[in-house]
Image (cartoon, rainbow, N blue to C red; front, side, top):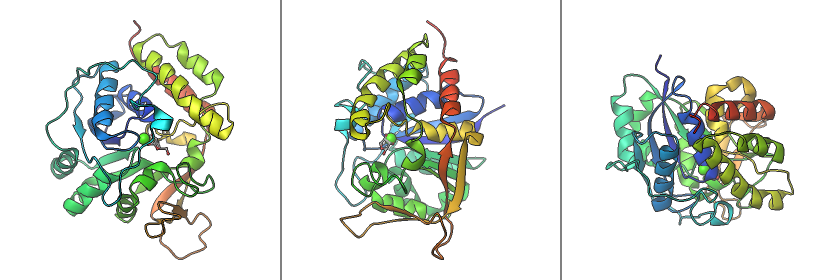
Length: 315
Ligand code: RIB
Ligand code: CA
């Protein structure tokens, strides 16, 4: 049985990389039509290269990978090497990827895929929303073939992680995010409120370290690096594994709880630029435009992640 057709748009980033490994471990449930990359955690030249190296590690050198927008729609690019390291996926040895880079611009691939698909597609963005928004702006009719968008971004109770009031993916390109959240399609949002519940604690990292394959070793190495910044910043036992919440939601939605809400993005104030105003208690008459995920079974999440990583062949 062919899996649900999806396109993953990402800015690897260790957590994006682990999300890709989780997605590629599950071909019966997810048919990845392509991986599109965007500037975010590190510049585009690195995010596209990193995505291709992860495909090598997954044994999927056949995967279609495309480079997209190298800067936000209106603002200057913000990057996060202080979190992800100079390469973006510090924690794994950098190699020259065998997986080729597609010739098409990622935005053109997204438009073509959505214009020619026989069935609606699910979009899974885990970085700034520049590629997705640019595709929608350039070819609005593609929305007719979007089944839903399942994205990592935003925050409500958790405040901001890259400014006092904004989460990184939305802050980098708030205008792209605003356009996506107004597009009218079903959007499931996994923001910091839920990703901060799935911490890569020592016990969980020990379990991942025991996985005897390249995907497990790469994940363990990336988590060791990814952990160092957030455990100091938050004083927590582990870093939040943000992006894999998106594919975990697709694979096991029962692990999560969400609520229909309005989410509106700040695009005017420099002080609160990129803030996601989530009307969780419906105190306004703004229409519900997202499903805001607010809870997750963290143990179930890591059981799923580990079970799927173990599916990659042992060495
Ligand atoms: O705020 C966390 C998000 O920003 C994650 O997607 C991480 O990879 C970075 O892109
Ligand atoms: Ca990301």
